[in-house]
Length: 381
Image (cartoon, rainbow, N blue to C red; front, side, top):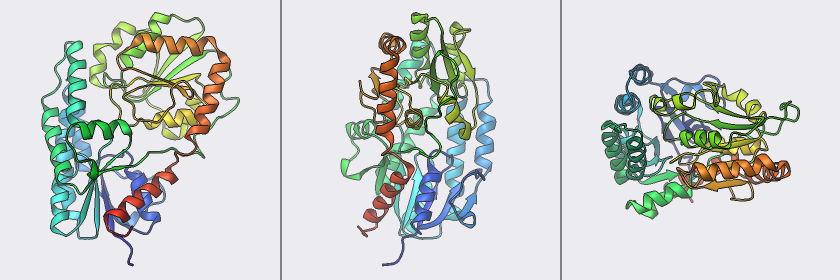
């Protein structure tokens, strides 16, 4: 049986390099279409990479506009332009693996070439996503950009035309089925982490400060506003809240009222992120919707107890590896933080449990799942 030929196409980094590596390792990668190729990534034959830089550069320029709609508008321009330009690099093969909103026009070209198509959806179904974010924006007197409705319409059309839809968590799966996506079309692929890099580092934390860490975009969607409120209410001595990640424009709706309460690190190179995790006492991802949240496993792999919301797709056992709380609930966040603040033994036990549990969720395991889905879709399984 001949090897499959797979083209991976993504107008952003996301987890696309892991998919391309999986296909490369199996001998299946025909082409990897991306924007600005990250030269620090390894395991991909550079001769198979096609860069389309213009959409990314335009998107970055649009995001600098002083409006809460700038991010959505950048996605609208960047993603569609990338999709239209990526079609030129499709020349046949068996499978096209694209990312949601980057692939409708490419998928149609692939179908004309006789290829099967897989769409990656890493967040809640667009209808659910839109509802949650519209409600949150309204709470802060903001209008959720109309551009999002245009984005989501294309998302849903991709689901209708794809042969398969890859989702990373039970949370995303549930929202897709609730919105009428046929369950038979869904494929579960569990994201992972790199165990050789994210691990406990004894001696990195040199103080006794109870340090609460968040990593991700500082935005309404990530629920940072509720973490800040929980931390403010607790007013703990010898404690610090650290926010790691760039700020979205909508953060201006809540950050000013918490000025002086937190320390913000706008950017940490991914290779250094493990060191930052190891300076923390607990990791919190309070997202209103987060299809997975790979930072959760990275933090857990560093031996931290984690607190997430029920709308974060990462598999964490409530009360064992940390805590799972409702969205928009600063009281619940404060309660769980206080428990961990008061009980150092509980922190250690949960951190150890989290570390042990996530060892099964490596990128190597993810690669095996990806290849199994390719072979099943092509009729090889």
